[in-house]
View (cartoon, rainbow, N blue to C red):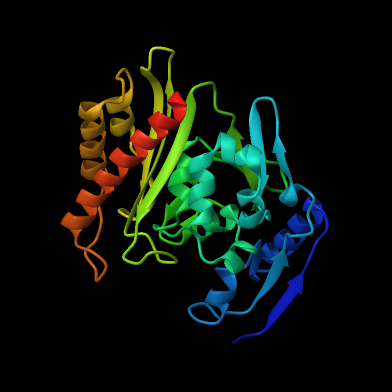
Length: 291
């Protein structure tokens, strides 16, 4: 293992200053939020020297705030904190379910959904769930904050849209209107603590007659990045989310998938499974919206 330095800034400006200084000198700095991915990588696949910039002391990164129109979740907020927040579980049950699938109870005491997003694994469970509910990244830089939809944040396997001198402060999520709900499902070979073979997140809104007026569908682990599948959402809108609509949405997800064959599943298997997961998640979201 190479040489490492560690800093724990207490303000966003201080954190940006560290990142900017390292970028200008051609040195590497890396953000630590929970560290459950980073620390493993430091001991295995990526041992190059760097400065670790711990953002757990930043007020903004630890904020959870439910406003009138949107909810903000800071980048350093542990999944365990979210899992115990009753208001968030009511508003975004699919997202909280996705966060609760990652690792053990001990891991969830450190892991963050922002870290899961920045790690940019195709199988990251919270990424399709975030896309489904329209989450937006709040990115800090020397020129001020910029915002980017989650579906545009991950650019490839292990890569994201952060530029030198930037870091993810948190996530903004529009508060769901009445009769709106989300759900996330994944398939794994084991009963728990495994990596998704396929995953699907769905959020939808129903009117008083039970007709779907808006929907977002995202799939994960079946392409280099999680995908927003507009064709699947279009198949749901204007329907009562009945069997025919669910089947059409499932077919759209299977068609949008571009998986690989490996020891965990074939291309054909993953395409089939992701469609099934979309169908089931959409039905769960529908039932929740009707409750």
